[in-house]
Image (cartoon, rainbow, N blue to C red; front, side, top):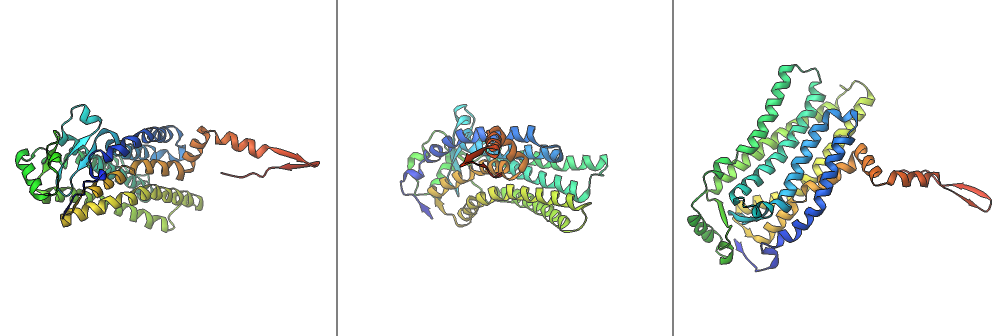
Length: 336
């Protein structure tokens, strides 16, 4: 099905009109989050500090990539379109922007995998691992990061002939206006959609499967009585719940565009309004993740409130007193 309404929501200007403005708000929040993780992480969370930072950076980069660096105008279910943003103005070829987009999504997934693997190693396996085992873990996670950069290269290095590619997309999406194909940066990334879907689907399946494995093992461990003390158990459980919320809320938002993308490919359904809206929704992933992280973890929440001056206000309110009709009334100690 090919549907074109000639609506402003379908035009290439729709996504940038929202996402470029969004980047203005995203950048300071992502920088604040990075600062808080690096300098306000308490010593008891030291073992997860760099994994938290890595996960944040990968999510923030994907956000900024979509909103400012390379806003995509994809014609799903065809692997074609063009990009708008900083990279385009710098002259970066569209195919490499598409490569970076797919790699950035994979990197965000690998960073989540790395965090759960870190928690699994610390909680389930314990901290008595040998040097060889630690090197094996490093090679395991490092291999996933390398894979994120190379898994889509076979498609990137074998682009179709662009003249033939445009004709193919025209036949596939006959409702598209000619000016889209006449855009100077219009690029057909791949014609063999089945192969592209298989490569991306396989990566998503493997990484998701590994995350589920580590998540399940951690849940089973925390459900047992292996913790050394009740206090240790409560701390571990509380942190794991906070982490799960931090990751789950943004993922639930990303699931919406992913479900549509799968539907579009499976049913050869084209609707550029839904394509553009899906892109806008996906670009909120890192922003929401940063906001949840700064809110859900108490040390980060307290650090942000302190930087915003709420600690001073709270102290003044708690210490204030009002003398009324000869009665000394102390304002109650309300906690944030």
